[in-house]
Length: 326
Ligand code: TXA
Ligand code: MG
Image 1 (cartoon, rainbow, N blue to C red):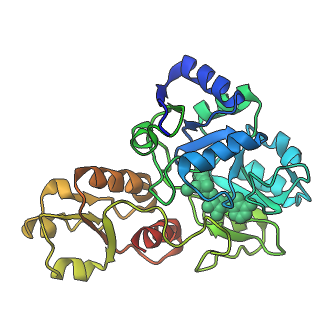
Image 2 (image 1 turned 30 degrees about the horizontal axis):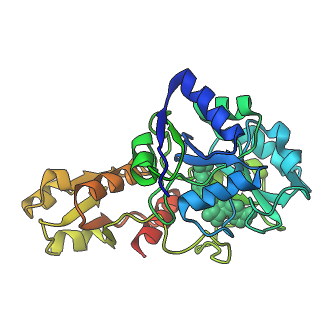
Image 3 (image 1 turned 90 degrees about the vertical axis):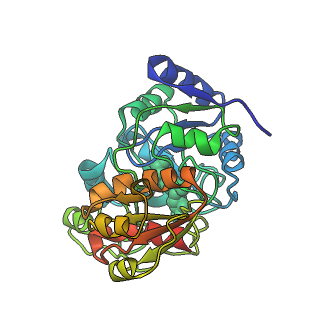
């Protein structure tokens, strides 16, 4: 099935997006993390459309996005008192909270789980869509199943053209990596997906320890090991190995961070095949998916990524790179 995908923008784009969503269609929308594929979370058929467009198994739970935290009790129950403090500190923003779902919420959107993932995103265009539609919007990243998450409207079109009604262009995403997911349904708050908001910041607001498992729970469908994958084969290589090994200048693309461009050029690798994403994890995260996308457009080759530090401020990046390399 292919459908015509419209590229929307500006005031009329927001208006059309709201109309399409109210009619149960799927529209890709900008968020501050990555582009999301949105549909009315209270409409089972609309939500089924997300799974179909992505080619994603229907037992993979989705995040429900809200305009603000006022509507939280419509979606979740047994809300711990810590949510108010977290919302105050981090919403709108790249933090998703895992809570008990309210009884009436359809299992279609939670993948059959009794829990629900909720976030209040921080993007002016998406905020308008949420506020004007007055809907809770289910939205996974706007990519085909297991592929890279898009950080611009162009990247969405590239992967999803023919599968969705429209893309609402809101410019490039501020963070470039998916939100942090914090599970509040067990006795100890646990990060189930690393993201822009780190453990230290969460602990400061919560005043208690937050768990950060080395391996995220693969029992949750969607939290699978092979994910966030470019078409090219991606390999992580230590700095020393990158300098020593022979690299095929015909097919290899290199993502580095510690300024080894000169040594790579000396190996005969073209400057357009090298990206230096810097030693700052925020800048690195912002450019990572966009760079992998760009390299995927150029050729079907091999992408070598210089290993990044194993410290907590790199946790989200290391998580995505390890899945991209599986
Ligand atoms: O930044 C983001 O979070 C982006 C933007 C669009 O908001 N969304 C996003 O959604 O990354 P998605 O579907 O690509 O990843 C959400 C992950 C799922 O893979 C799943 O593991 C977890 O969130 N998740 C969602 N609901 C859950 C639930 N009820 N229980 C456990 N995990 C859940
Ligand atoms: Mg995703």
